[in-house]
Length: 368
View 1 (tube, rainbow, N blue to C red):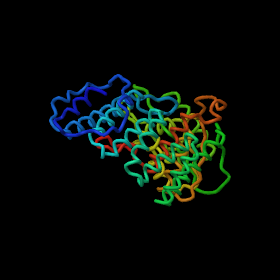
View 2: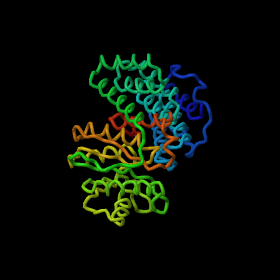
View 3: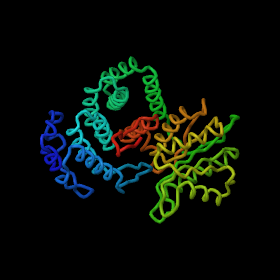
View 4: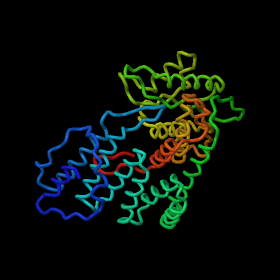
């Protein structure tokens, strides 16, 4: 156990800890990405817990983002540190089940689904009727193909909250349909009447504020679609600033220079993740009562984007919208024909976030 925990445990008679975790369960050393705190200065358990959580938040939001074909996440070493700090706080305050949930989701981000399931199950043992915990467990047991366990959690969820159980099954059905649909590089002119839109997802800008080649590829795909469907609205979503520029603004300027009428374009300059891309674009689709939408992203990212946009539209509308997708081939489509475990993990994780579950719920570490 780290020095912080040892110091915390010596706080004059404040707590006798239950054996909630094996002593060596999280003892693997991980390089700290932040300066170690001196916990000797604190005189109460509350102060130590507050500092542990503050440290977790600082590490979580540290600028250690990586981007590969549209996937943006915190570095694994960050998330291992976050987990460790949350579990130390939980040992001091074992009624704080939220700390276990946050730690479990940190492990999901790290790709350690088995560890996450163990933490979710530990949390469920103290809150056996928590519908969010049952939702998480049904989801990740489904991901692991543990059908018996998944059905047991789904059955209990259906007893406690039939609406949530139905929504979860709808998420599973949507994921299955999207990942089993072959990727396509080209769209086509829609012969069907009705309001139509193209939704193009941004990609992290270069440090100098210029567009990455992958983003330019997505824009070429968008331009072809826009020409084939001259009445379609075009929603360009991406708001991570770089050198005082945003993806949405640069994408719009590029399309206008290539001959697309600016009156067709909606810039969405605030989304900082695929989840926010979906949520903010969903509102734009609802406002314009779009009936058919085509999502454009990289081939390695487009299935996640489509799944999240569909889920977002369940909540914002428009009711009955039909969504498909077209891929910019950042990788050969033949290599991506079968969804990988890492891609599927990202789809399930972000599907729950788009639906409304908060991954981190331990203030100040709060994130949907």
